Amino acid sequence: MLPSVAAEKSAVPPLGLSRASTAQDDLSRNVYGLLGISLDAVTFPDLLRSVEKAVEHVSPFLISTPNVNFLIASQKDGDFRESILQSDTCLADGMPLIWIAKLLHVPINERIAGSDLFGRLKSAVGRSRPIRIFLFGGAEGVAETVCKNLNAENGGLHCVGVLNPGFGSVEEMSSAPVIDAINSSQPDLLAVFFGAQKAQTWLMHNHHRLRAPVRAQFGATINFEAGTVRRAPQFMRSTGFEWLWRIKEEPYLWRRYWSDGRALLKLMLTCVLPLMIETRLRRRKPGSLSSKLQEEPNTCTVYLAGDAVAQNVGQAISDFRNALTGRKHLIVDISEVRSIDSRMFGLFLMVKKILASRGMRLSFVGASAELRRSFQLNRFEFLLSRECDTDSSIGDSSLRQIAFR
Image 1 (cartoon, rainbow, N blue to C red):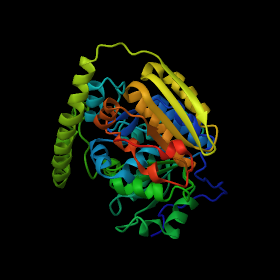
Image 2 (cartoon, one colour):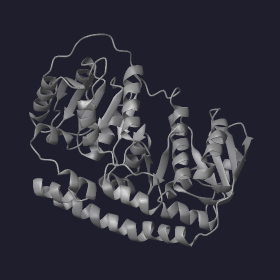
Image 3 (cartoon, rainbow, N blue to C red):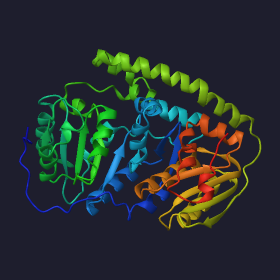
Image 4 (tube, rainbow, N blue to C red):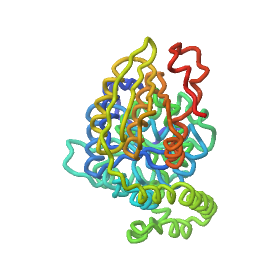
């Protein structure tokens, strides 16, 4: 099926996955680690400026919108979790995430839902031209309706194409005709309307091939925009009861909400509650953080000592910038670290992302029993992977000695 909206023709420069210009920007992101995923502490104006910048510079900008369903799925699916990490911004799309952040003193206070982002972009005025959007997915005929509505409104979004790939695997939906149809329409924004895991997998699978600078999974937004499903009133969205409205509108969703709700309750009891208790019992004022670097042929080791917490993140960012100047695997020795908070976990995730873009690895050594517990309660135990223990391809003795017993 080809796009039903004609696309204007002009040459568009290809976009690769090279992150030379954005790798350092990842370190500057105000990102926090929350129960195993990354979340950016951004406001709507900040987000809209980032979208505008990506469109202006034609640079890849992948947006993820984690909600409870994302959070629970990421606990079970490492690839899905990695797709969130590889995103260029991660928005808290769900009041339960905001509540958890407040309980854990994580300064993410504003819910930014994908549907709200779509609405802000649609209503934005003052641009030299509207953002060109391609609608990918949705039920038969729904995207066409939304496309016609957008172009009739003459607002901040101009639809240049729609495509419903039907049902199939990610590979089947990634055929050359499908990708060519999207790219030939030359969109600034590719809006994908699949389920969360399938959409994220598809976006990552085709990252090298897509030309649209801004890409995002918008889920049920297409149905709200088409009017086939009514969105919950604002008071239900702001109080966290949107799920009740969604079940009323789409009764089949009760199974997903039941399953996610049970899993969330378990996380609250086994992770959030212990973290809250530990935070309240910890009376010691955080101290400073120091570091030193040691270079070897294939690795760079960062030795941290002190409190790896938000008040010291500026120094840590500077240290990691220096550590990332070469193309080497990075080892972080945390044997002298007393505590780690969500802001530092967010920085570790950004370092991991940068290294992954270079085909390099991040490893931690020297974690005490107390720090291992902190990694586990925050659901970042995957950062303490022992995969490098027997990796002889790296060569440096310090990396081969990694062990967490």
